[in-house]
Amino acid sequence: PYKFGVLESTTGTYGPVGQPELNGIKLAVKQINAAGGVGGHKLQYELVDTQGTVSLSTTGFKKLALQDGLPAILGPGITPPGLADAPLAGRYKTLEMNFIAQTQAWKTKKANGHVFEVVASQLYLAEDMLNYMSKTNGVKTAALLYANVPFGVAAKGYLTSKAQKYGVKLTTINDFTATKFTFSAQATKIAAANPPGLILWGSGAPSDGLVLKAVRAAGYKGPIVGDVDYGNAAIPSEAGSAATTVVGFSQINYVHPNATTKKFIRGYKSTYNATPEFLSGATYDAVHILAAAAKKAGNFTSAGLVKALTGL
Image (cartoon, rainbow, N blue to C red; front, side, top):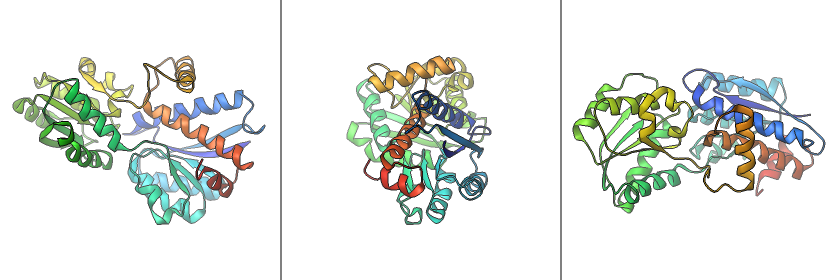
């Protein structure tokens, strides 16, 4: 079999991110193996639960690359572990394909060309959210509430730099701590300012839904647009009835899916009895990209995969 490693935060604060990402990986492996594998080789993976931490992720990377001798590792999906793992990929000459939203990991020289990425840039998501709020909701002034993690901090920069392009003025810009569970101060401030619109940018932690719930409980009634985290399957359980009051963006086209997307959605629903979210789609793609690289290389070595992935 062709065996690869997986670094995922399947438990802990970022379990809501890691679980759907792992589901996408499992589904892709299942479908590829059912179709005969890659050149007759079945795919297998070994999972390390990082709990979203740097220490567990780097320790897991070393185990998978050195102790287990695996040529390829998928993940992690959280930025700090992703940045910490990138130099290890370059040092040990192990292919890594991560799911973080920033480009620093694969651009760092220490990655030595061994780090790849499947998630589209945050910049496009930020522009889509601003465009929607302006054109669909008719909002020209909006507040911004973002998670103070690298994913959210980068988004703040994108949103503030592009707001004017879409005729939106951002006011009442605040952040929230992803690991906390009470957000009455931020919610009260938003409700008191009562902006025509609100943009929420989360982190994938339970705090995302709790912030939404707190804002509505504080009395804010305006339109709310959220990033991909607000398409997360965990949002309804975290936000309660407030979950129906946010438009959460996704890079999956549910309305007019192409043939590949249809196969993914259909397979996900039949396997997990749930509608897939963007995170699952990103990891599902990662496995298929890895399989395509292996087929192109004719082997499952790190050197062969890196060469095949470049320009694929």
